[in-house]
Length: 134
Image 1 (cartoon, rainbow, N blue to C red):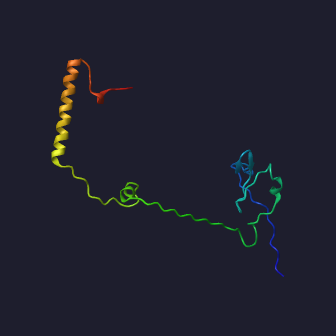
Image 2: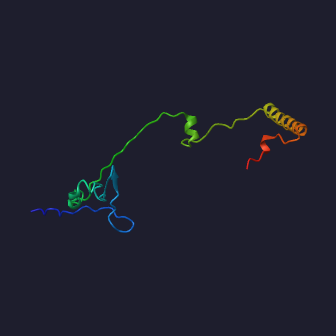
Image 3: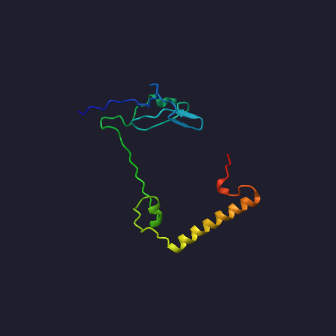
C-alpha cells in the first residue's frame, strides 16, 4: 500500500533579520508573505487562515515548476541593429572629400578672424566658445 505524502506547511521568504518577510506581497493596503516553494502570496489581513494551510508544491514528487516563455519580434533596419550593437558594423568608413575639409578649415579661420576684429572694435571678448558661465 503506497504511503501518503506528508503534508508540509508553506515555507515563507525570510527577511534580512531572519523573520518572515510580511511585505513580500503588497498592494492596495494589503500585505503578506510569499512561499518560496509554490510562489503563493496572500494578504494576512484578508485571509489569515492561509498562514496554516499546506503547501501544494511540497509533496513527495517535489515542487511544481511553472515555466512561461514569451517571444516577441520587432522589425529593425540594419542601421538600427548596428547602432545597438546587435550586428557588427561592416560598413566602410565615410571618406570626406578633401575639398570639403579645406572649405571647413577656411571657414573656421575666417570666423576666428572676424571674432578677433569684432572683439577689438567692441572692446570685449565676443567668442561664445570662451565664455565662462560659472
